[in-house]
Figure 1 (cartoon, rainbow, N blue to C red):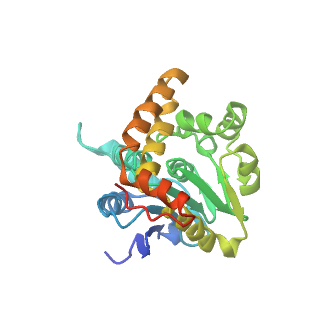
Figure 2 (spheres, rainbow, N blue to C red; figure 1 turned 90 degrees about the horizontal axis):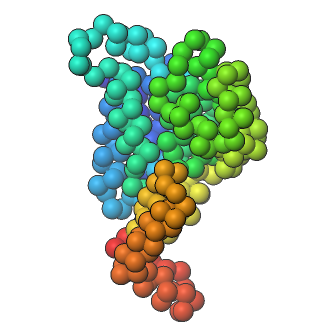
Length: 261
């Protein structure tokens, strides 16, 4: 392959995955999806890696799917997985990833790019980033969470506004909606993402994994069921070495050294 469509960098306990098709606005194609799937598998198996940053090169985080590959799926034999099938497998892998994932939106984020960002546990953005669903602008229907997930992350009326107008909003506007957690100067996003990832990487990996599991599942549960799930996880956590280490470090007035067990 003449181009590395996904850059992979490790800094201490942080893995950075960078979409690298800048001339195509980092549009997702089958090659990108394959690389994402492989790298996420590797990161999940590596206990030394505790947090993932997902970002892009050039003027875009991700402008969505490569429409040539989406359209090519219509000519595939019946039963053969097409681009949308593959995308939803990888997006599901990212949503259910056992470690914290930060989406760092460096620029244009639209359609499938927004759906990709919504798979992360938290979203930060450069001041100049713009964010849109945009499917309605092209008569296209969202296929990876645009209509299904966006209303779970921001107020329903704002989700409907984005879906139905196709309008782009600024990072600051999306922070006001609750989708974006932090906005940073354009030249400072990469360092800010790494700083945030390093802060999170100092926490107990097993505690974070269990928090994420309960929080992700809570949207599909009643409050009482979600509380019961939390209690089950707590009882399991009380038996971990990280729990004991946290209490001991607090008593000894030192920073805890978590091992993830």
